[in-house]
Amino acid sequence: MTHDPQNRTQWIEYMQEALGDLSKFQRHLVAQFKIDLGGIHGVDHWLRVYSNGIRLSAMTGAKEEVIRWFSLLHDSCRQSNGSDPDHGPRAANLARNYKEEIDLPPAELDLLIAAVASHTIGCSTMADITIQTCLDADRLDLTRIGITPRSELLYTSAAKMEASQGRSSQRNAKFPIKVKCINCGRKLQALRPGRYQCPTCQLLVEVSEEGRIYLC
Image (cartoon, rainbow, N blue to C red):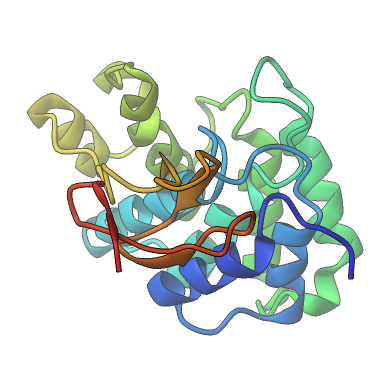
């Protein structure tokens, strides 16, 4: 069996806890991701964008299934955590190539592709409320890198209000975290509180809600 240092199966399970069952193509988005799934553009960011978007859609009327797909696709083709302005168009091309795997009507698929392609640069003329909501959901998560979203750079009144009140999503602030095995010192990545077995020495440990590690 091929060693998977990112433990993609565990990340998929983590996503399913938040989103429900994932399709084969949605799992593929995790499998083909080229950078750190636990990094600033990884799975937890995707889930916060989804949470932001669904919350905003209750006020904007945006199409929720487009938001779900946008959250999973928009950063899926990043090749680095730094400047990568073409990752939006690359992800849009991926969506076009796999359009049969995306369970959206043609009109909504077009909205998804437009949102994914444009999210790296934005577009002040984007009139469609679903596209605007997708872009705002992503921008509201700038707080994860210490940037406060600016109201004048958001599209929807709902997002502008959240930004002005400092209410953007902070899902699972403590997790995922890296802890050290208390027997051999190997670093373990914990996606949530619970029991983990060290892959080096097989020691079973418990990670608490506070991120502390204990012997079982």
